[in-house]
Length: 477
Image 1 (cartoon, helix red, strand yellow):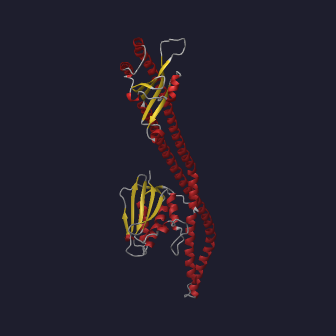
Image 2 (cartoon, rainbow, N blue to C red):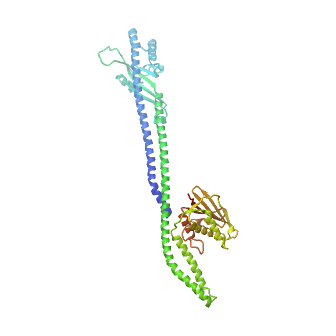
């Protein structure tokens, strides 16, 4: 039952944080995914901008090359030789010089010049000269006086899938026009097509590095944020769990206090009702004992009645002591004086050998705030329990005292058999006892007295044998 209540209390306390944890994890996953998507879109936009810039750059190169070819090659050749024939070694060499001198500092990988019949008439790669129908669709667009570009990427399928190819080139087809108008047509006459291939792998690699840096940075930031939130949530869970356990303990103490209060009220009522008739029975038995001593000296029935009445009266006194609220008259007093008073009382009885008591008092022990009469009763019960636990005559009881800031401690350690671990959990339960003639209220009375002094009591098993009762009391200011 208690385990179920504990689980329910713990679950009810940590349920909000479980929801917070789930929300935190899902939010971080969504944010990280969104960040990666945004980074990919940014990289895509950057690539698009880079492509537009490269196209514009190639278009400007083509215009400059078109101007230089017409100014330094077409016009002089037509003026001197009347026609252009690139089979002529001199003309080809002049065109090659013009192209290379114009593009030598612009990192152009390849230049192809197509004639109007889609045959490569000039190329930086001389092996391609004379190839037919090599221009394709882009050649057709250039012949219609349109500039077009395409992106050529090379790499394995992983590189191409994740947009980081090994090589990236931009190919631009542009018309080679006649700059001087020889007719009334508003459009410039297309006399060929120029193809420029430029390697932009370095620029794209920078974009890919930027994309990777964005993704990695976002992942690290999200990871750190996740760890921080995880720590906060875990810390909150621990706090809620501790509070749930404390609340459960307080509820258990409250139920126990209510139970003990009910038992106390019932015990007090019953004890008061029994005490008066018991007193009459005892006094009557004593009177009968005196008369029977004259009539029948051998009869011991009245004596048994008196003895049992006395024992029952002692039990009722224990009930009343347990049920009666303990209000201590606190004042400064010396702990050693109370202990020595107990030892003096025990020395008057032949049943207790006080020479079996070992004293280990700390010097200069401060005074305590206590009620000497109540502490005397509590210590006396502890002494009696310790003597009863030691059946052998060579056993001993060790009394030790020491201090810590604000508190004074005393311990009673016997050399008896100790207490079973299972019984240690039950010794504070009212009416629980292992003695045949016990009431099970002795330890409860001791505990009530110590708690009335704002102190604490703890019972453990000593090493190598025996039991130890440790008491902590507040020291006097």
